[in-house]
Length: 114
Image (cartoon, rainbow, N blue to C red; front, side, top):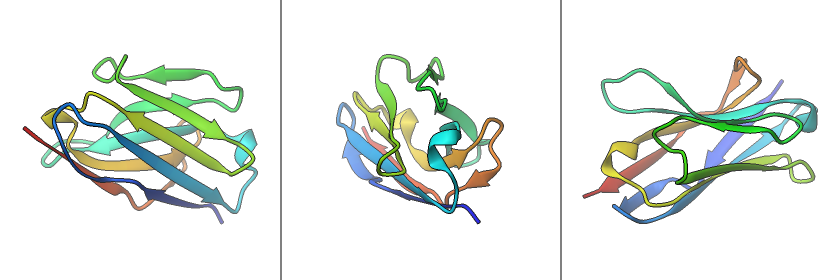
């Protein structure tokens, strides 16, 4: 059974930075694509960034140039480096395994104040 545990969320001012981490267990991490998604209050969950097992990355247009997804297969961890944060980046950020995703973490709250 796959377990995904996110960490690193918090409250930050606009223009600031945060680094999210997602530790995975219970599966062959390096064989799986991983992704970060977010859900703002009253909105549907949306894709933020993905990274394949080969390291190919893709991003939502709204975060291109500001966010970076990466993975460390030795640590079974995927990261989301978020810079130049905006209030509209506020939401619960979820880590997911697979494309399309088949396992989800519990989420971590990111709040960006203006």
